[in-house]
Image (cartoon, rainbow, N blue to C red; front, side):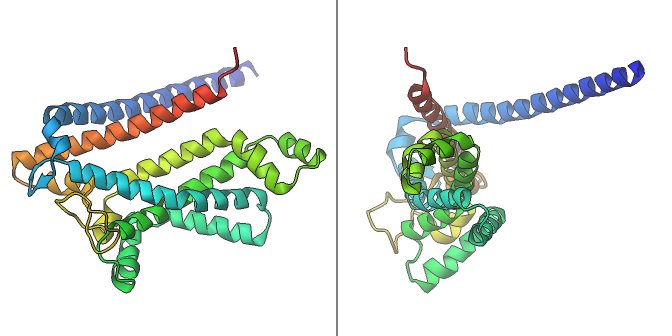
Length: 282
C-alpha cells in the first residue's frame, strides 16, 4: 500500500514537472517572438510611418492602420449583436433541437479555414453582389469569422453562472427577458467581453479573408463602403517582408509591432475596466 502511494506521488510530481517545463517553453517562445517584434519594429517605427500613407514599398502606414481599425471595428459591430444573441439562445435553449443545430453550426464555422471564408466572401460579395473589393466586403467576411467565437464565449459564460441566479429571479416573478438582460448578462459581462476582445484580436490579425475581399490600397480610405479597396496592416506584414528592399522590411516590422501593441492595449484596457467595475466597495 505504501509503495503504491509513493509511486502515485512520484508520478504526480513527474507530471507537474513536465507541465511546468512545457509552460516555461511556451512562455519562452512567446517572449522570444514578442521581443523580436519589439526590437525590429521599434527600430523601424517613427512619426513619419504613423502619419504618411504607403508609397509602393516605402512611405508610411497611416492608410493601413486606418483600414485595419475600420475593417475589424465594423466587423465586430456586425458580429457582436448576432453572436451575443446566438450565445444567449444556446445557453437558455440548450436542450432544444434548434439550439443543438445552432451549436453544431457554430462549431463548424469555428473550424472553417479563414481563407475559405475569404473565397466565399469573394464569390458572394465581391462578384455576385457586385460590391467589388471594399470595406463592406472585408468587414462582413471578418464578421463571419468573429461570430462563432463571440457566440461560444457568451454561451459558456452564461452556462457557468450558478443556477441560484435563475431560481431566485423566477421566484421573484422575473420574466425571461428581464432575467437575461438585467441579471444574467451583467453577471457574465467579464467572460463575454473577453470573448469579444478575442474575436477582435483574431479579426485584427487576419490576412487571408481580406486578400479576397478588401484587396489592398496605398491610399487612405475615402469614405466609400463598396468598390474601393482598403489597406490593412497584415497585408504589409505578409507581402512587404518578401520584398528585397530595406524600406519594405521596415514597414513590415513596424506593422507587426503596431498590431501587437493594439492587441496588448485592448486586453490591458479591458482588464482595467473590469477590475474597476467588479472591485469591492471600500
